[in-house]
Every structure is written in structure tokens, then in C-alpha cells.
Length: 411
Image (cartoon, rainbow, N blue to C red; front, side):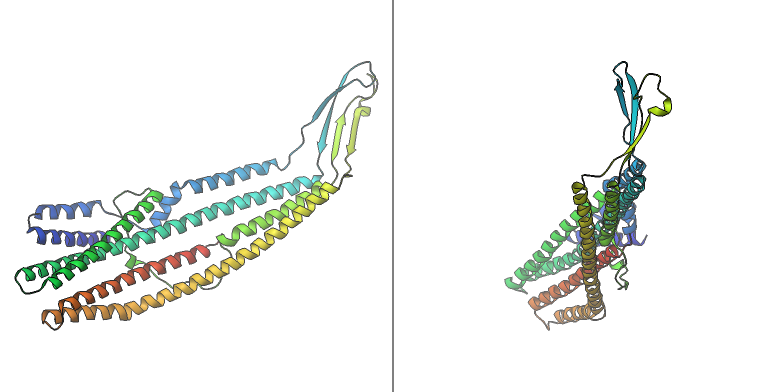
């Protein structure tokens, strides 16, 4: 209801302007727009936007499927070689059928199981990173939507004010009370506001379309007010884990598992077989055979082991680099956020109050003729820019907070 109330005021404001310009001929349309806006507008909160995006995002669906794929591949850890079926004539008088089965050293299977489990862990981390990335992206787009929406609403009011001033100046010029310079300057300032409003409306259209694209929310969705955002103090301690380092940690563990598997694969293989090597009536126990492979050609195994050890070293350095990158990004975001909060507090306690007092004073001085019309418009423009700067500070603070939460999200 609060959101609908704000939207009603916005529409009333715009329609009142229309009535003033057209002499009250659109009174019926005025009420129709209010009723339509009140019924159709639907508030889409940031949390709702994130939840909707997660339900329909193909990247998350793909990441979830990759986890299922990795879990399925874990069943291939005990991967036996295909048996060999042989047909031979051991004495040259008859043919007999034999079979042989090769086996890896028993520890190979357990090492392979651990490696496949580490692959699954990486897939799970990737899934969580996909969710964190999507939440960060949707949050950032939502902030852009809030920012553009706040600017459009503010500039709509400014447009109405400057239209009224320009109209008054035009009438004063026609009656001979003011000159061409004052009339032209009022038009220039109105055009300045119109241009700012046009750009803000374009930003609003782009930002809203992006959010709706990711969420699938209806076209009549409305974002929450940027002024309603809760700018809180956040933890400044460096996060233990985050999307930045979680994947590096998982890949380091995977490289260690791959090294362990490579070392075990250098161990001898075994084989068991059944083949009649004698006469047709030779005893069955004499037809069994077994053997072991000797890892005599060691140079390729040594090279493979060395490469696996180097991969572990590489992943260790990448993890350390990720931790340094996280520290730098996190500390920068925290300090920037603190600065933005301080600037916002300064605006709330001083700048905005001073701007309001200045606006009230210059308006009274203009009515009493103590200040020129040109100076009056210049001061109003400066006040407008102060309020736009405040809206921009809110956006920048929210962006930094969003980045901090992303870097601090545990995986």
C-alpha cells in the first residue's frame, strides 16, 4: 500500500501539470490514470527479484546438472579393464577358449574415488558461485533500476517547477514586465531539466528491462524506493572464504588427489586368467594363470609424476594469489563504503538541510524582488544538482555494499 501510495502521488503530480496546461479538460483521464496505476503496479522487492532469477536462470540449472554428472561419475572409480577372450591351439591339435582379466593395484581405485569426489566438490562450489554471481548481478541491476527510478521521479517534479517558471516568465514578457533575456534563460533551464529527465527515463527503461529479463517478472513491476534501502554497518574482518578463493581451494585439493592417483598408477598391475595350455584332458587347476606387470619403463611415469607435482604447486600459488586479490578487493570495498556512508550522513545532516533552507530563502527573496530572476534560476539549478548528487551517493553506497556481501559470501 505504501508503494501504491507513492505511485499515486507521482501520477497525481503529472496529471495536475497536464490540467494546468490544458485548462482542466482531462479531469476524467486524470482519475482513470490513478485507478489504473493503483491496480496494476506491483512491488518487486530485491529479495523477490533474486528468488525469481534463481528459479529460471539457465546457468544455475546447468551448474546443478554438472553436480549430478560428477556424482554419477563417482561410480566409475572401480573401473575394471574389459576381459580378454582368447582362442588358441596350445598343442596344435585342437582349439580352446581362454579368458584373462587385468586389475590395477588396489590403492588405485581408492585414489580414483577421492579424485572423482574432488571433482564433485568443484562442481558444487561452481554451483554456489553461479548463485552468488547471479545474486550479485541481479542486485546490481536492481540498484540501477532504483537509482534511475528515483531520478525520474525527482526530475518530474523539477520539470513541473521549471515549466511553471518558464510559463510565468513568458506571460511576464508578453506584459512587458521582463525582458527577452529572462524569458530565454528560463527556457534554457527548462530544456536542461528536460534533457536530464529524458536521459533518466532512458536509464530507467534499460535498467528495468534488464531486471525483468533475468526475473521474468511482469511488465507492471515497480522497484522499491532507493531511499528505503537500509545502509548498515557491515563486518570489516576479512572473510574466511568467498567465491573468489573457494574455487581456488577446491582446485588445489583436486590437484593433490590427481597427484596421489598418478603415484598409485605407477604401481604394478595384476592379471588373472584361465587357459588350457596342455592336452585336452589337462587338469582344471593347471589351466589357471596369474601375473604381475613390472613398471620397467619408468621415464614416462616419472615425467607424469613431476607434472602432477608442478600442478599442485601451481594451484597453491593460484590460491595464495586469490587470497591476496580477495583482501585487496574487500578492503577497498569496505573503505569505499565507509566513505560513502560518511558522505551520505553529511548530506543528510548538512547539505540537504542547507539546500532546503536556501531554496526557501531564495524563493522569498525572489517574490520580494531582492534577487534577480537569473540568479534565482541558477540557485535552483545548483540545489537540484545537490539532490541528484545525494541520490547518486545512495546508489554508489548500495553498489559497494552489494560487492562486500558478494566477497563475504561463504561457499
